[in-house]
Length: 153
Image 1 (cartoon, rainbow, N blue to C red):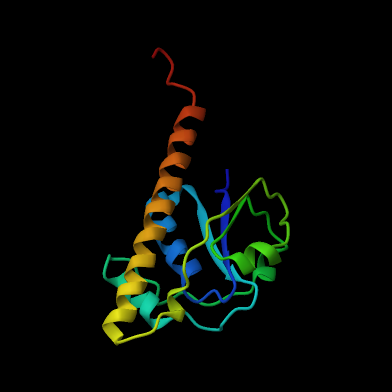
Image 2: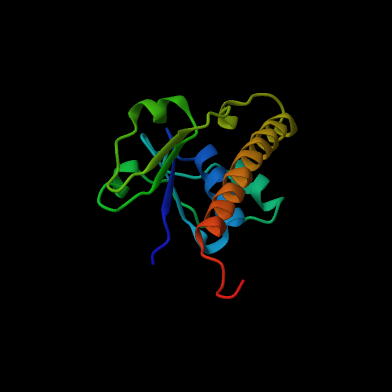
């Protein structure tokens, strides 16, 4: 049985969607195929997004910015938008069962000193982490309930 695909969408696919992809992939393990994309991809993953994820042991350095249309020809079980623009632009994907919108501030718009900007990236990372770890825990719990108990139990 193939893993359900969860597609996380944002406008630029440079910060929030990659933070969420990395965090959900780490939290869900091999239960989900986690991907991210954007409605207007920036063409890069923000260096500060890569940096704040390295701080918690998650490597985004091999990620790339992708367009959401790359996923129109494959089954996507769940679509999660993490910014309002992507929520409005989001198409329906083949096999789509669920759709959620969880909006977060865009850390790429943070201003100030390098340390002040990093503080915003860390705050948004931690907010995304709480939401997506809870989602993964709920998915795992639901999956455990749908598995029949072993014979004789």
